Amino acid sequence: MDERRIDHGVAADGVRWTLKAGGDDENYGTTLRTEDDAGVIASGGMAGPKLWGTARLNVSTGGNPNRGPKGVTIRSDPLISRLLLVLEDGTSAVITACGGEVVDGLPFGIAILHAETPMREVVGLARDGDDR
Image (cartoon, one colour):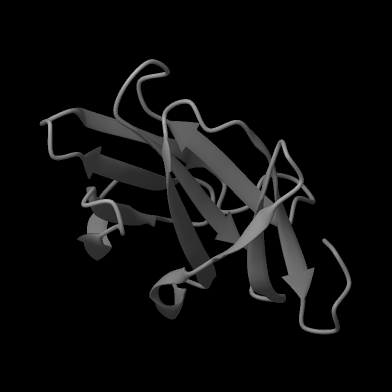
């Protein structure tokens, strides 16, 4: 599988990140690499079909559970227009798209959290406002 960099940046807390993706419809990989100011490097991702079964969202989390950043990687159906990250306390935040609108037929998003941040779920909102 030939992944290429589709986006990179620095999160609000200084964590540097790189998102890579690539492959074909049945064997598609997505990897998020993070590095914080203390030099803690984490990487996580997913591979398989672009979207699994009838799922409209594929979500992967990665990172050291005790220190450093936790990365959340999302690839979704193009009908999903907005992604929300919901935490255990019920608060939510909009996940910004990565790599432009669509790459290889999929929208991507990431979130960078502290290792101890309890995440509940990722919710995709369709263009008509229905949860997916």
